[in-house]
Amino acid sequence: MNIRMGGQFFMNVKVPILWGSRAILQDQHGHLSIINLEGDSAVLEVIDDHPSAGASFLPRTEAFVILDRDGTELYAVNPKTKSVTSISLRLVPVTVGLQELRVGTNVFAGNIVAGIGVGILVTESGIELGGALPPGLAALRV
Image 1 (cartoon, rainbow, N blue to C red):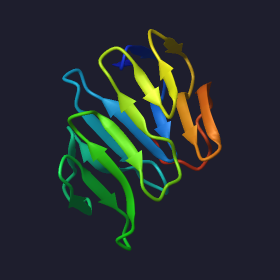
Image 2 (cartoon, rainbow, N blue to C red):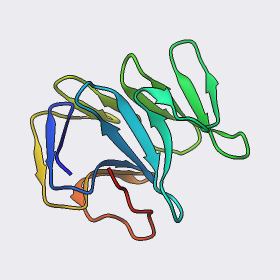
Image 3 (spheres, one colour):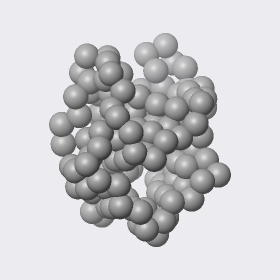
């Protein structure tokens, strides 16, 4: 996949941003989509800055919160600021700006990430720029 996000160009990568087990994508109009890759099949949770059909969510003032099957609040999405913030996932926030990508306190601007599984990998223990796709995730088809 070739995709431009927040001033970064991800060329020939399988997942531009892997936030825990979720792929974060941005279309050419700037809308965010989030796909949960945990398990056997990929599950679309957010599409075009909105909860996907069938996703469990709660509306908030300028955001919405995605819930798991048990009703646990997982993460919040603010479509205006293009930010994704963990509630119970223990991951640093991601904000996709026009010219930069913020991952926690790190700011990425003007990078080209090419020919790897994951452009930016965010885990509970840290972040990695360019890495292999972790085993056990569902295939992402775009």
